Image 1 (cartoon, one colour):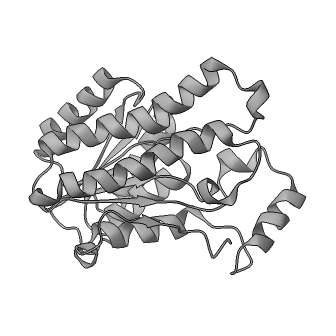
Image 2 (image 1 turned 45 degrees about the vertical axis):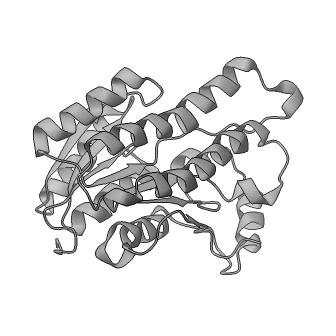
Image 3 (image 1 turned 30 degrees about the vertical axis):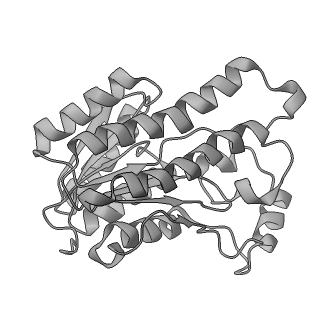
Length: 248
């Protein structure tokens, strides 16, 4: 059932065909927003998200775009505004992860992380700054790993740390338009993508690290995003919300 909290709003969610992005798209649609479901390769999965939203009475559109390419980002925003007439909410969820020692990380792997995670977020924010309605909402994505000092994630946290810093600056830069800019940093979340590379023992270890004794779910993260983009989130900007169940 669709609520009216975001009625009349248009949201763009990058990387929304599965996992956390999918959960966010479904939640924002449930709250009344029209949603653009961005994907890079999973067309069938993205269309399935659109179908689920439409079955629930919402409005949605799947748009292919590779956020590591500025021309694709521009086309993504063009399509969003041509179809729905405006943009109120941007969720920069698209991202990739790398688990590898510093000494084995290649230039190509590093460049890919920076291109999708940092560059993609930066230039999507640029388009939002040019086109978003006053009073809009931007939510970027980092990771709790930027504070945990865990080995094997050096390239990944480099790209995510950049997102945290630009979030602070853009909150000030876009504040005159009453656009809030925040960052969400999930902890270990039970998604298909991350679950492929973890053993049951590793999952148990990460669950024990949480004060609440379990892994996060995509819906846990979607709940936080929904609060930030709602009217209730109007006084929160420039913040990094560590949605991680209390991982210390």
